[in-house]
Image (cartoon, rainbow, N blue to C red):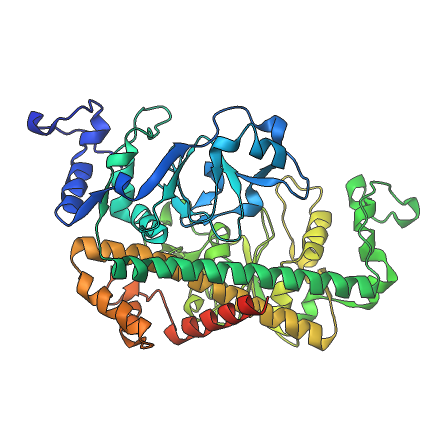
Length: 509
């Protein structure tokens, strides 16, 4: 947050006259970084530029050879949401937009909007293009791009980059200011040690995506064998009219729920609920004031991944019916009604709000049930039963009646196992990228020394992970070696095992 009022000593004034540049907190951050060894950013790259500044809509394409067009909106911390990218024609990419071409190992930094968020173009992207909100850096071979994004995404790097921002209505960073950005200088061993955390996260992310694709293919084939055929017609079948008078309820795309194959192979969700309840609705002014961990529907997607995504409420605002036990299933039932999660160990004892239905499953593989409750079939059912609501909502009767398709045991087990691996991969991906930021922060703040990381990297290269394990075990969302904090890695051995599985799967492709 910008300091509202401050006085700047004229002795520190440089060519910048905008007050943001002289905020005391940003000036102190600059001093802290420069009290260590540091280099200018321009020493790490061969070339830089801003993405395409012209209108791009006419180049949009959904052809098989189309190219991802990366805007600031799809760049998250350390990652690009490739599924959220618009795509442009290969011809426009090679001709009109060729100057904004980016390739694997290029570093992308948002210069407008979510300023400072940085990522490396991953190896799965052969070529891409980018928009004007993005600065791209073509890195030198001697520089580790994954270390650089770890620094840029850490709190000190974020402050340093945001200090360069100009303008008040839509602040942005000029390409002319970027070359002199101070970067923490560390040895190649330390760059590799920190950068490898992000590379490992990229590897796990790619593995999770392959598992998701494998599950989607398996599920689609299983449904086809049962008799499923996707329908998109809006034609209403009059003979099927029931007590619902809203025409959308009878859209032909919903007809599968009335087909014999579906009814024969499905059972209502109620049969698989041992016990359950909607959550509670604390008063709006109680959020953030207590010490009881609380999950809102907007937090649910990251609840198993990010140990810091919770809010807190006073004890008197909750009730036992909303208390989560390990193995419970948590369903979003209001709004998007799409997210469903199986509660891991660290969620036990947390409470959920009224937009979430919490239940203890029975008589079915819990992970398969969560997979199905995250599927397009479930979303189609929810779209149908909530079709006449301004805000989509699943009432208890509709929730109990939600049809669960049963598949062969081996298929359900395959989907369940994949889901477990996907969730573990996503959790450890988050922990790895968070650890990379935390390691840089700990170096800057003096909680860790370069020598410790050099020794850990050298030991890893000799096949000994004991020093790495010791460092990882001290990392938390709050920082390094913070007493009482929740560890980023609940099981470091699990991390090593997942990395081996991901590497083996990649080698077998």
